[in-house]
Amino acid sequence: MELTKPTYDELLNEANELRFQLEEANDTIHAIRTGKVDALIVQNEEGSQLYTLKNADQTYRMFIEKMNEGAVTLNHDGIILYSNSRFAAMVGMPLEKVIGLTFNTFITKEFKEQFDSLIKQAWNEECKEEIQLIKKNNQFTSCLLSCNTLEMDEGTALSIILTDLTVQKETERQLKLKNEQLAEAQYATEKLNDELEDTVKSRTADLLISKEHFRVLSDNIPQMSWTNLPNGEVNFYNQQWYNYTGLTLPETRGWRWQAVIHPDDLSLTMERYMAALQTGNVFEIENRYKRADGSYRWHLNRAVPLRDDAGEIVFWVGTATDIEDQKQEMERRDEFIGVASHELKTPLTSLKGYLQLTSYKKESLPPAVKQYIDKASIALNKLQRLVNDLLDVSKIQAGKLEYAVTTVNLTDMLKGCIENAEHIYPLYKFEHHVAPELLIIGNEERLEQVFMNLINNAIKYSPVNKNVIIKASKCKDKIRVSVTDFGIGLSDEQQGRIFERFYRVEDKKHMSSGLGMGLYISQEIIRHHHGVIGVESELGRGATFYFDLPLITKAKD
Ligand code: ADP
Image (cartoon, rainbow, N blue to C red; front, side, top):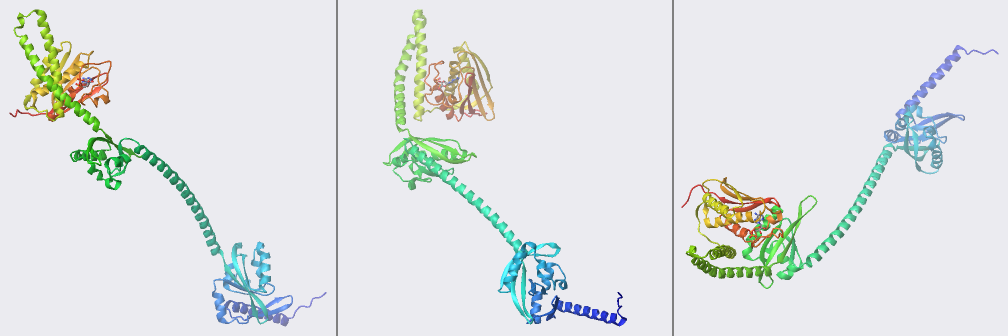
């Protein structure tokens, strides 16, 4: 079969026709892009179909173009008749390519069915739905599709406004995440709160129990007791306190307790109390408390600090024990000692006088009588020392231990005593280091009494080891005299008590004579000389007793 070749004119016409069509298409595209188009012809199997926007004026188009949302118009077949540039940008295609495509192209597979039913519904009524769209680079984006029918000259079209939900979704996601985190934090807080509440409840219960225990305990002890804060304020008293003072808590809380203390005891009480608060050491003092009837009774006060885990003082617990009866007992005893020693002193002095008279012209007496006289003399001296000690003790108690003071050459006095001791105790070896010219102001006789007491004790309490070391030397502005033995020694607890009146260590193994007055008197004498007496010792290894006295370089009298 022979094909008829088109003539030149035919080809020219065809070319012109095609050029015209191309120009027309270009104009349409331009018109669509610039919004000048009012009508659109779509070719399909049924031929060309013309679409015109009915009320599409310029303002409306401008508005659509400027919208942040995508806007498209579809015909019944779902073909895009119109699109704004925002939608083209959303799907990442040039605007001219978007128009004429079926909208379905941009719906993800999963949402196709949902989309179809949305479109079906949209032709009948206004509706909205969230649909996933395929964006440029094959990415997905969630969009809210708001559908509306739109009347056009050639029939009804469907307008779809697309709101990109990506940002909103992200915000929602963030919000959800934040909400979840918030819920989690809230849950944790609630849990913590619950736990805390439980702890507080159980602690409060514990506290109530221990508070109650403390109250029951403190109300049932015979002593008065209190608790005070680290700053010294009293915040609790037991029942005994109220019974005794007849006062109420508001009348005695804080520092008001001072009104209950005997005025003569107040300053020393305050001094010790403040010192204890400052140092954290146990507070202890004997003082008088006023009773509800206005009379005073002696009490022994003690307060100990209670510390927390960090060692900080939380509060103090104090007790006041009534020692009035013991005090009176002691007073009666002191009185008796005073009177008895005084009464003993007179016959003792006459006894000594008679003995001296008897021993007058001793050589003419038979040897046996001479021996009896010597023995009686020794016993009498011992008795006289005892009575003198007893007298001293009662003088100290009465605050009447008085004596004249002069410049004393301690070196000479000590050397004399040592010689004397060597004479009395020939079995003992006295090693001595006494510095020359040790001068002090004091009473020689009383200082001799102290020194001899230390030497006598060193002998008495060192029955096996017979070495005694005596030292006397200057040390800065004072003189230290010490007596060291290697005898039974003293424990720490004993060392703390041996200067008390009538205190003796109860030791069945090393019982020796004595009344526990020597060190008490010695301490008083040294105190009167503005000095200090002390001991360093280890049980079973001996002891060093010493006293320090203020030194003077020149004689003053
Ligand atoms: P006493 O008359 O009992 O010796 P003191 O007052 O002189 O009285 O001494 C009190 C107590 O101290 C003594 O009973 C003794 O237990 C103890 N003591 C004193 N000196 C010594 C010492 N050198 N070694 C051990 N114990 C001593």
